[in-house]
Image (cartoon, rainbow, N blue to C red; front, top):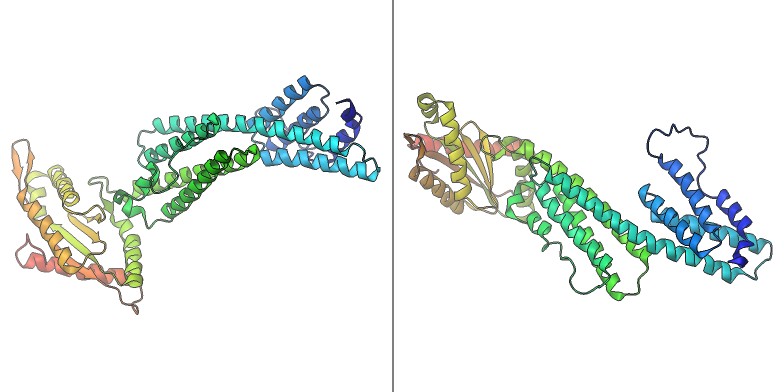
Length: 426
């Protein structure tokens, strides 16, 4: 240490020459440090550490520097670059002075600082990341309506398991699921329950982020199991994982908003406003793959008389009942929309005309076989259904008029079912 101390004045000059200077910016001190002021304070702590002349001071000042950096979100990359830049400036000065006899000792001195800083930074960073995850979980727990955030909750728990794996340093095979399709969050993403979200840009962003996140996690596990660890690499990987996790959370929040606007408040089916977007996507897929899909349009028979006889509150119960009939009778991959009033539209992916008619008849039979019982009132009702299979040719232009034409065609099939006696499929 005595050898290094003779270079303290050079080190001080190098630190003062480097880094940001914001002394001209006014700060009223009424809250937390502005980030630029935090960097100025950070520079002072770095200088104090580099001018420490005992092991006790080095340990104490290393902790102060790292803890301050973590608290004020000074990245490890910034901290590392400052340390390396100061080291290079000092070595450059010595070369200019032709004073090369202690270069190896100076290199070891800065390498030792880097090692101590990096090891401690990783520990504190993982602790803070774990606390952030716990805080995020507590925020989700307080939400009155979690909706998709319950799946983000499972994702955060997966992150916490990864953090614990790195912290415990056992590096066995008891690590979180690395396959993005098999973790709990991934299984939700690929479940039929989310099929109507597949066409949204937010869902596609989440899918890409999630795959990247699992790729990073696999690198973390592989790196840990090699046991030739450089904490700086783990800091970089875990920091990137935290970034992707936050981005997934932001996109999930957008999906929650879509969920709010896309669901009919009475039946909890999809609303018509989402139909065009999903329909456009299915038309594109049909044109690209040459595969059929189908539309099914349903209208409750004599529904006006139910409202007139029993009142609109009972009519609403009938509509909710029919929505459950549809959900029970159809497949999880089908899109069910409340199209308006007592009209319902179902989009049936990869379905030909014969299969669409069979599904329509299943709905028709199930509806006629049931009754709605409210106190001492029993109501039976039926439904008329029109079905239309769609295969988009290569020369067909896809735009809103195309969608409107198909809606008109399936509506005419529904009208035919009404004309031919109701409670039937055409």
